[in-house]
Length: 144
Image 1 (tube, rainbow, N blue to C red):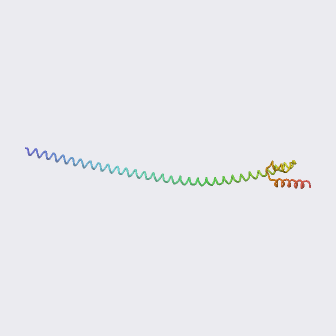
Image 2 (tube, rainbow, N blue to C red):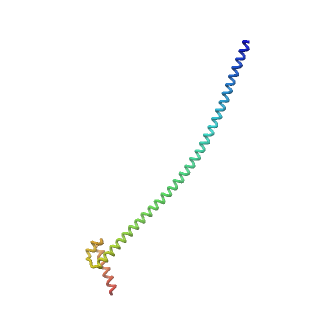
Image 3 (tube, one colour):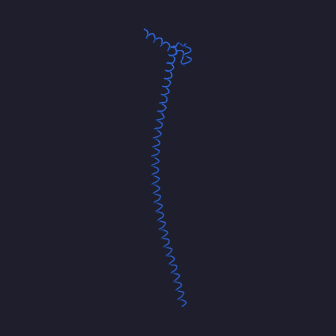
């Protein structure tokens, strides 16, 4: 019986070893299956991220082009504004000169001396003489 018990123990040990090997193999297959699933999920996430990055790049390009267009329009508007301000300044200078000549003419009509008119109005002596000359010519043409 001793031999028989020894054979049974050997068979049981072999059966246990086989079961452990089968169990190990099944665990490895489950592990490999889970690994493949995780790799597939990571691939899908990478593809999704690549699509999102591409969309963001496209949006960034559109925003960049839009801001360049706005920048060009802003520069054109600034240029037009500067031109308008220059024209306005010129017009104001012209109006100031015209105002000075009109004021000089009124003062000369009142009989104020030429030197006093130059000092009050801010025109040159030659300009004041020219205004006086025009006034005399105008009076002569009205009288004659």
